[in-house]
Image (cartoon, helix red, strand yellow):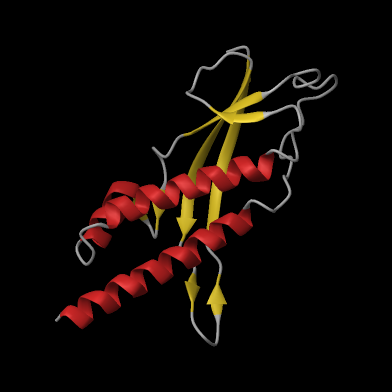
Amino acid sequence: MLRTAQFRRVLSLCFFAIVVSSVASCARQRWVVIHDGGAPSPLHGAGPVTVSFDYSQLEVGQMGEAAWVQSKMASDPGYDKTWAELKASFESAFLDGMRPEWPRGVAAAAPGSPGVHIVVAPRSMSMGHYMVVAASPTTINAAMTFYVAG
């Protein structure tokens, strides 16, 4: 019984490491402009930006976030902690990926922060899988909205 528990723990940690590395690699992708703010840019001359994350509309595997975590906790009672660590890793990777694109400064902050504030709202997430012969990436689709002075 102990070996099975240890094996599951090691397997869970390996899966977590793979997902974190997949999410971190997403931060290297370039931005795609969907709608240009026109000239002059509303961000022209803006200083540092703050970023917050809104997971209220996130779906993972066609389930809401809470349902996803509950389904995973059925087999791993500590999955809520793993999920919180995964989200923190995503947020850190997002900020790290944005810093070179906005050299004036990027920091995490609460919504409604003064100056330029970006809200990142992940809409869907597809968990990647790693197998010896094939792998599929973790994908995250998100909407970003920015506010200037509120």
